[in-house]
Length: 267
Image 1 (cartoon, one colour):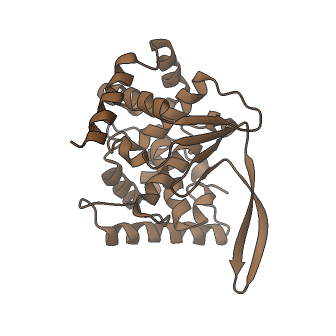
Image 2 (tube, rainbow, N blue to C red):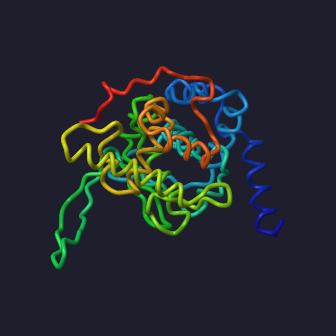
Image 3 (cartoon, rainbow, N blue to C red):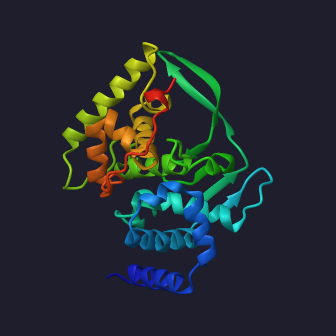
């Protein structure tokens, strides 16, 4: 263990010994985020520890007059560490700052159409900077974690995982355990089907924002994996299998079948 790792481990042990979230706050977090009910007791304990370290190590910066309360930090933290519950917090070490706005934020964008460049305004619930901070809309954070398929925190954390290979392309660093060729085949097929269904007016099985790009498909698929795992496994079983292997989690290991998929389609 290097000197940096030693001090980092010691600092984290002190955070856990101090206990950032008391029992009452933690019970509130479990009640307000029903997607956590699928976790086993040992996973809940690990989640609490990771959330405490995350909350202590990240800087939560208010935007546009919002006042950041302790329950807001807890809500963001517990959902942010859920995707890395088995992977470890080192996957989230490339950023320190989380900007929190009261509601969706407007961003000026540019996109190229051949030789022409179009400027437009986009309203987003969250945003990730490459090797930089995350921005979250608190209104959308409050709407996350209820099991309906929407989770802005997990969505943005998924983008951070995607960037682990230094490209936001829908394929994170897979290590030696997964086959990149298979990953790309599975996700490309599911993304293509989503785009075709949207363009033909049939409606999509998951949030139609998944058709924006392979990167957005991956992020939306991660949302569904934790929010409505039965829906994702029903319509994209291979995608579910790849995410289960990558994240080293299986939300349906207990046979959960209580997810609804809004008549199966997203308009």
